[in-house]
Amino acid sequence: MGDRVRVVESVVVYHHPAHKKEAFDLKGQAGKIIDIVNQWQGRPVSANLPILVQFEPKFRAHLREDELEILPAEDTGATAADP
Image (cartoon, rainbow, N blue to C red; front, side):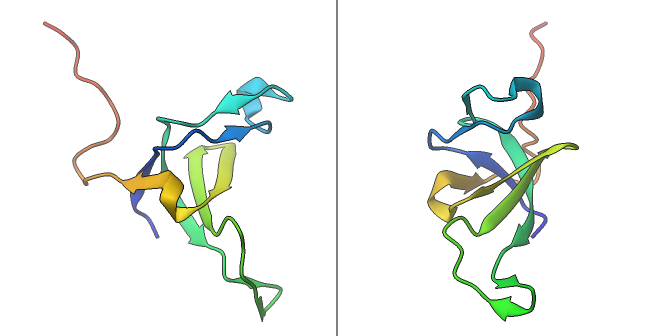
């Protein structure tokens, strides 16, 4: 947990705060892993989308491992400005 990740597969969600009830593709978005879901109410579960990623303060999504790539510590997803 705590690793920075980027979505590498096309994943369409409908609960993004800036795009309510509209299709929004997460491909290319970067976020931070905040939980690996393997328990619910104290009981073990086998979640289909076990990795919980925080993208913005008010947006997080459950994803599969094959939809993500771990970013190097120095790669924050920001691009350098051209001189």
